[in-house]
Length: 351
Image (cartoon, rainbow, N blue to C red; front, side):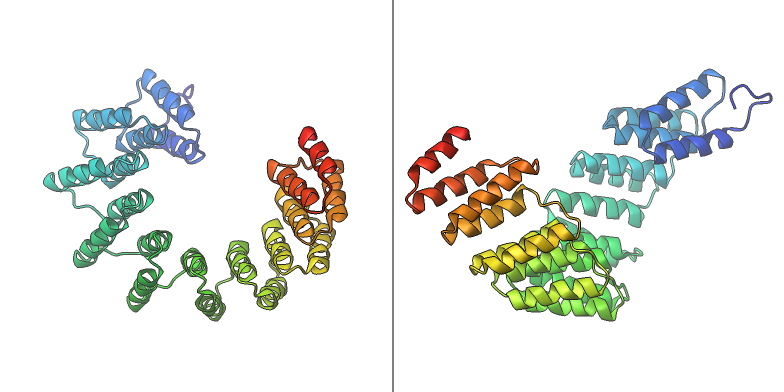
């Protein structure tokens, strides 16, 4: 394009530069913008917005603000993309106060922040744990008649769940739905995780059923959360039912789900069921990791089936799975408990 005569318009170059930036090749986009300038092609505000975006993603916010100064010097008017990009850059650095100051400056200069601006700050506040400030901003946005979308509410719901304020998160869900905004998979996963962290698995199961009614397909992560909770609660029948539901819905369990089930069986000394689940995992094409082996080895050691634990340890080495310090500690403890300290000592020296 640079060798074409006449030269293509800046719009044509900007389309390509935007695509390169979207592919996250930020240094390439920056160097190409400098190159087109060296050919005497003046960048427009859209080209400069791409430059601001690239600098922000590369954590060179000071250069981003320099580009803003260039935009003003050239007599262009920064648009919402320019300012929202800088707000996002400040939030990515954790400088929420700076982002708020920039928004205030925008307002003084006649730029009214839009839903994207406030949503970016909401997300930044939640990421640094300032959920209460995010809620205050959300209320201000509601009063200001912003078109609030699902992302704003989901971000705060997730943050409330992480702050162990699950009841407040459920209340916000109800409020959100009363405004006609329907939850998606991300919203449900946050709530199910929050409920499960408190052992409120019945409410989590209710949400899972609600998802089915709304035709929202649960992800592997949804079932990971449920399986882990049910198994830790000793509710293996329910855990197996959830596992079967997952298979029926065509969702392939992953190693984490199998490991949760194996752990549940081991906690109840149902070692034969644990082995059966372990073998099922292998038959279905999943390679057990050190975490899966450690669970089984621990189960066998607690049940004083030390030779089977040692056999699994050897199998790990043969299959190229490196034992961890947890593996060694578990086996050493197991051999000591059954009165075989010499084997324990050999393992210690091997470790």
